[in-house]
Image 1 (cartoon, rainbow, N blue to C red):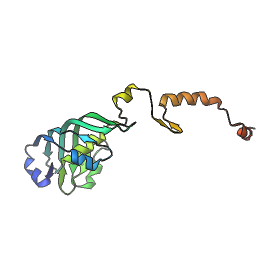
Image 2: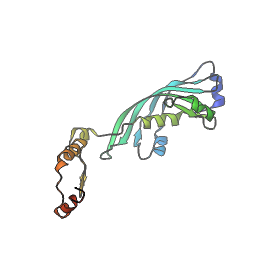
Image 3: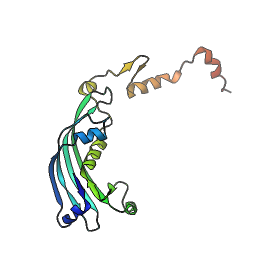
Image 4: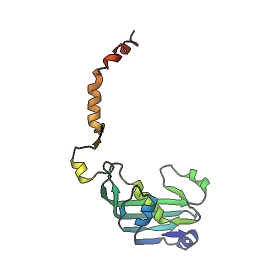
Amino acid sequence: MKYAKNQLLKYRQKPLVLAEQLNLEAVAKQRFPETVLALSPLEVAGQVSYLDNDDIILTMTVTGTITVPSSRSLEAVTLPVEVTIDERYIEDATRLSDFEETEAVFLLENDVLNVDDAILDNIIANLPLQILTAEEKDSDILPSGKDWHVISEETYKNEKMSDNGVKLDPRLAKLDDFFKE
């Protein structure tokens, strides 16, 4: 869904109400090929308001499901999508300093509001950093290979505590005395 600024002018008095089902899977796979394996049709409900100061307010909720790779094994994991979007679009870049850093304010590019891009950006931004399959959550087995293995943060901390009395290679023991006075 793309709306030109001129199209939105007629919604100064009453907001444009959005209640649609969008299929953005092809666009999502093109924009985020490493992240999105599949994206279900999304239920979109919200509105676009055009304010008297020429600002455009996009408010909506998006629900659906997304399939992404596990952060541990790269196996497919399906996650629910439930995103609330509340963004402001302005034309003049000099006005960006009028807003707090925590506010979602964006420049309107080419006088076009691209709702699809806003939806996809918010979905990707709201993905968790650690995505695990059900088996990976239940299991303590971590990946390993030839001459390497992954350890948990807890195991790392325990090993670090027990390494306080680190034993040096006997060939380097004389260097340990080098800095003692």
